[in-house]
Picture 1 (cartoon, rainbow, N blue to C red):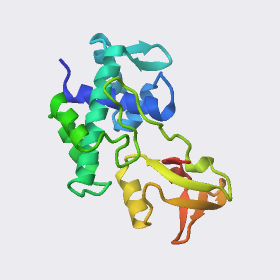
Picture 2 (cartoon, rainbow, N blue to C red):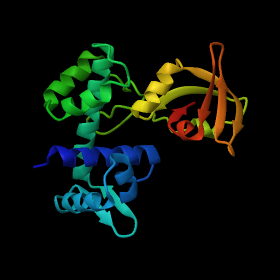
Picture 3 (cartoon, rainbow, N blue to C red):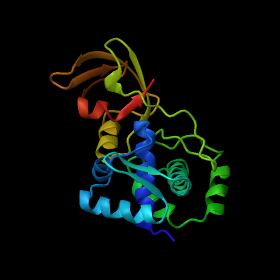
Length: 216
């Protein structure tokens, strides 16, 4: 039997694995992502390892077992499908849906999630641009190139954002949504400032934010 806190850990490790494109995730990354102490994370890692959800690799980190991957996919899939429903059907903004989806993902049975998925037209991405895995774990293209990796004069089209409330509010206040396209006008890595521009606006973005925005 697995509880809600354990489910959240597995989902976080799955997300970190996807974002970093790495199979082994450091406990420090898990702690930073969840906002927990190293001690509490290490205790949970031991607990999940004993239950067969994780493999602990000394001095490197943890990886999901087949059992852990299956459970993580179930949670990630439910979370992102709920986000699509809340945004498309109930008109939640993208900075509002995370907390609601967090609650709903733990309560709905797989049959309801599958019916919801079909009702929504089998979406491939959630409202933040994260791919929705199918029941076998296969996903659509995951966008991993960050804004900071684009050069001056290149066109950047936003396809995915990290699910960070302050970030999403910043983007909304600057009228930046998924599929918005901008030209990188200037890039100063020393000062940590990147300027992007389109026909509607010019936006100055810090290095911290550019690492949270992904696109093509």
